Image (cartoon, rainbow, N blue to C red; front, side):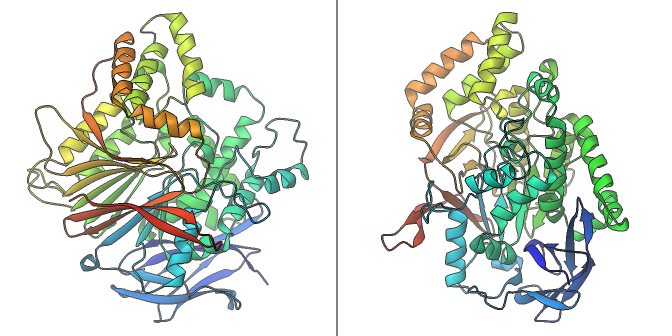
Length: 550
């Protein structure tokens, strides 16, 4: 009899349907059965010896929350008989309920050694404990995980020991992840955490990768990629990373209608073993990134979310370097403007959320250094500076939106267009992580002021270390002296001024933390909470800031 290895994860949910993801120990029929009579079934599919199902659940009633159980071949496997958590539910909020969007990134899932967590309390664990302690209290309607859900290049001691039992760690890639089986170990370590497992079973989630899901500084530059492709281990690492991302994260990002229309999903379900089909897809994504779209759109009532792939969709050639390839950029523009009408008089949504793992607006010094570096690598000061610039780019992780100046400006222009006119939303929020601190920055455009309130909202990490050097560096990066220094560096690179200016209006804040946007009608409120340890050994989320955005 098949058992439940991982999950359930409640992924997609709207007013009438949902999807629930599970991994099982063998082939079976997975069923989700709700207390109100709604249900769904799906046969498992097989990838690299592992069995998965994404169960569509129909017939849900808007504005309700119904408990559910998971059955495999008719036998109940969730909730466990000895569960200390409340029942998992599928909630279907209505527009009148408003929308609570919690988000963050960078969760290193290593279990605490000897009961002590070396990087402090896990904000996701702590959020889960709070929701479980008071199920009737307002909880997030959706959880956005903005990258680095797993760390393929920075494993725990327990995983390192497990790796050493299956291969020689003295050979590349050493104590990093090498193949699909090893990726599954990362997801088990992260999602079998009891608090996180329960939270993900009862709060819908949307995910997007960042670099550590594959490797630090993934797709930094064309030269970086050429160096990686010259190794004898990179190809397997990348294909396994993309394959596991599709199975564990991307599938659940899609709506039931999108899944029905997805030829890859059909292929892996129609064959006894879908490994070859998925591997061919990953190989195509590697050889022709523009042929695959990892970005996606979700509409939550009057809130539109666009999750943007800012890693695999890059054009890396120095003479035409962009964060998004032309097709991806056109897709983003179409999704942002769709439904507003030719005249812009119709309001398609009240709030626009742009999820991108990498911040659009950075501390001014960091932005100017990245723009300068892009100019150097592009040959603005000659070949010697180009070689030096590539070395600096890799060493200092200079590969955010600012390192793609044309893309930085294009995104700013698109945001200003979306936020201007009779059909403008109340807010446009760029949601990001990556940089291991949290802040709020607000842009302005010379000669025009969008009608929408526009903000860069950055929240990171959920659970990771924040060294003193990062704290000092980013505090200085926002300062007036740093801004003056940045302008001098930009002049050396002959960099054109960015099309938008901005100011920090909150932060920087350091710690394991999570942000929540509460959207109701055309109002928006932002809350940042940090996980703190009490003297009695319990962990709590403490409010750091609570402010109106609109």
